[in-house]
Length: 590
Image 1 (cartoon, rainbow, N blue to C red):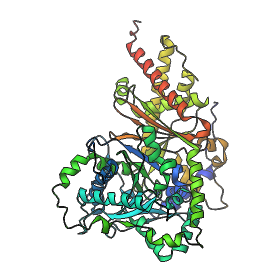
Image 2 (cartoon, helix red, strand yellow; image 1 turned 90 degrees about the vertical axis):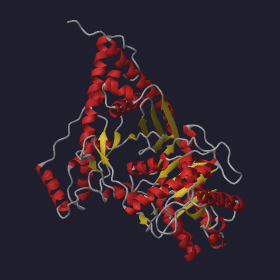
Image 3 (cartoon, rainbow, N blue to C red; image 1 turned 45 degrees about the vertical axis):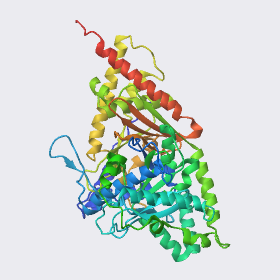
Image 4 (tube, helix red, strand yellow; image 1 turned 120 degrees about the horizontal axis):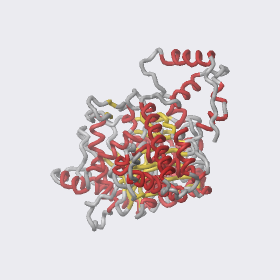
């Protein structure tokens, strides 16, 4: 639409800005908003973490799993044992400080990245509280167990040596303990205990009330049980489902869906999920950790296959370890009587949370677009930044979906700064507007017109270059959104704030109808998260050398994911055709 120019900050407003910056940060060398985004964006928000906060990764299959398993195991338990074995090694690197710090840059010396997020990775859990949640981190040297969810029951088992080394137990021992969890779950049938996992999927205040009820009726035993669950290194979910497609698997890893949603504890910082047929993924609680540190963890645990671990572990003796019967504990079993007693309201809380969860999941839709036409190799040969090029394809697709551009957020990490997390790269710009409007609300099929074709390619190149420039500034903490957030939050109650913050255009520009994030990993089949506004879409994407992946989420009532999936394919094909024809066109002889 029409461009609107906002008046610059007045002298008074500019002075307020400088004064606030000085007062807020002059006492500390850490000049950032590290303590603000988790509070404002996450732990104070009362919406369920499911869909609204959590994200997922879908790992590629492990081709070394045996075709047939023993009667006591499944492909899921074998995959889970492999991931836990590798997790033990990575956790040891983190807790001992031996993990090399991450760094970015193509030239030496590379820029190191802040590692503070790693303290929330293991033995950590979000805790529901009225109005504002808290986060607990437990000493990894005192808590050497993991939590296993099967059939909505939660079990604890040790997975590392008890000598304090943090080394993983033999694979065979871990496998036997996981198989024991499955056996106990089948024996219990789940009938003597409410499905407590549903509580963690509800509104945060509702869950806080339910947690108080758990402790009221369960007393000290319940407090200890919750502590065991919260202090586990990670939680691994063994699901009975056998998904095949990326869409089926993604739905399970994102929310658990209507069949497996009870088999989660959504407050745990990391939940690994393995299905009966050996599919695997991860669900992350996002409030204290962004995706990139978790990508490092997932890269490590998926790099070594079941066969690799089996060979390494075979050198270890399996003798002298506590039996699975003795080691595996049903965490809430001792509280069953109290939870189902006459004076308990726990079952009622669970029933309401299940109903809310079912409604939340049923109201959402997910679609995976696995575009096989081309990927980063071809985009680079055309002379574009792959990320910025795909961002423009998304701009064109959403423009055609809605008939207008919507505020678009691309997450850009600022971890070179202490405690840095992300800044916003804004994909809507005068250059992207010119490009999408020239391309049109639908394909014009005028590629044969050399003048029009050249104009479109030139506008695409200008839009891509504009985006590259913006993301470069954002990565250096020179974006606008975190700055405005800090300025708005630093004003005292009753104090005048810049008129910009009350301008309708400012509010519209921060309504992220398209929430995007780029993550490409060779062993991730898909990944994703939910939309951030009711009339928006979540749009996670990966750009592999020869293909692209998009995971699209939105409220089901809009019927957008399938249509946007088609429009993304349409945009990418059209953009490729324009560029190939332009490159093939004979040069002018003038």
